[in-house]
Length: 167
Image 1 (cartoon, rainbow, N blue to C red):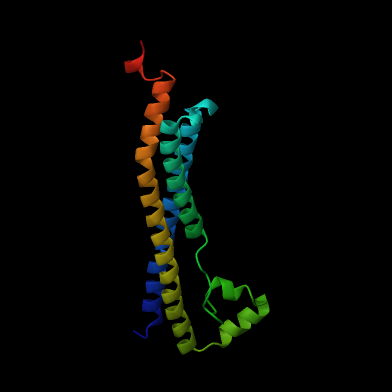
Image 2: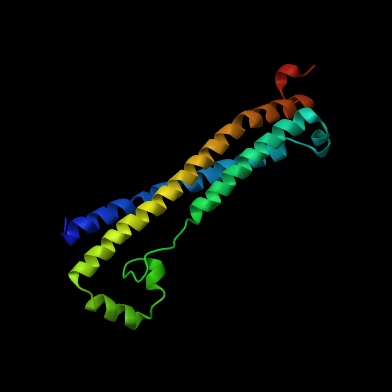
């Protein structure tokens, strides 16, 4: 396992998970926002005085807020670590361009190999944190669906928007 090409492929494999997770974050953010818009369009201020509107609406809102929280945390994972790395973006930006080039050209193959392995480890941790946050956000959104449907049925009934209950 001392071949740099093998280690580089492993790092590329780990980095390949980022776009998939980012796509889920963006999609779920859109779903959550759509749920909020639909709920807002179906309620009037007077409806919020009714407990049977307020309770499902509040449960839906709490679920979506929990989901948004985890989506926010997934977008900004812990990026600490990788001290003195020649590969980790956060450490690279601490150097001047000329210092970075000089340090990179002066590093040994063993140093580069260890840095690559460190990046496989570090980025795997970041991917796991992002994935866990997206998982929790999906669960929170899923839990908010039942109160959302109840909220729509109740507000639709109150405002006679459901054809079956029109007189």
